[in-house]
Image (cartoon, rainbow, N blue to C red; front, side):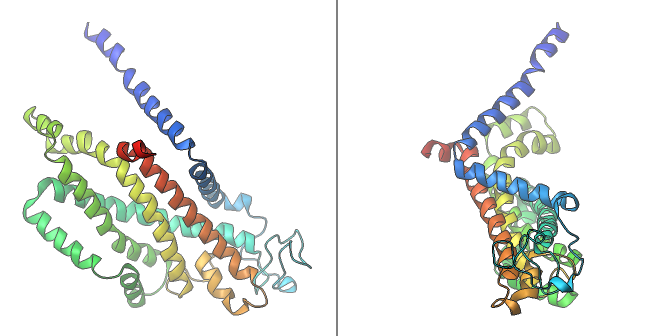
Length: 304
């Protein structure tokens, strides 16, 4: 009898999960702008991951004979260098593709480190309360009172530029946002009936956190992660532009703008192309995150 019950109920869980995913995709696909944004972002991510297969040229290869060659749509341009070349004759399209690997890679690394640490701290603070919650929130209030970019710039000036240092600094700057958001959700869930019922049933704290709390905060945290990724990409590009981030000759969008800004009047494509990549990336993330918030929030979904 027990075996028959198990056999009849166990397959229902994945079926219900698949059903929820299909309903979410159906609701999400109704927004054409969000669908296009998601496709664009996926293309950017995949091209960054497989940059060695997608990029038409070596991003570090110099070709001084074709220095500042115009893009294909400008007179004198050629299909060899579709988006033209920079001041050292390097293919701009290839450098933008590899630059996406660097910028998005830093963004995902910061989300993984800062987002995970901040979410765990926020969950613990909201669930445990007491002195730990008070001390943590006072520190978060202090850090958030300092402008994010100013904090990152100050620390980078002290420890020096570099990709690893930039990831550490951006993670330090981003985790309080995740912690505060996770804590606020945890505070609203802590007194819910199903949490109290789990306690009365003798559930361990770690089991309650992982089985009952985590699924309820996962959706809003995913939305926050999407929005924070956009901000991190912009911050990384700005830091690299100021010489406090990725170092040459590694391709990075902000660094490419910085290297070519003196040639804006005679070779504007060397500046505008990486700038367009930054704009498209952040715009697609923001549109996707907005729709994601609506699709996962019943109140918001009812208004749309």
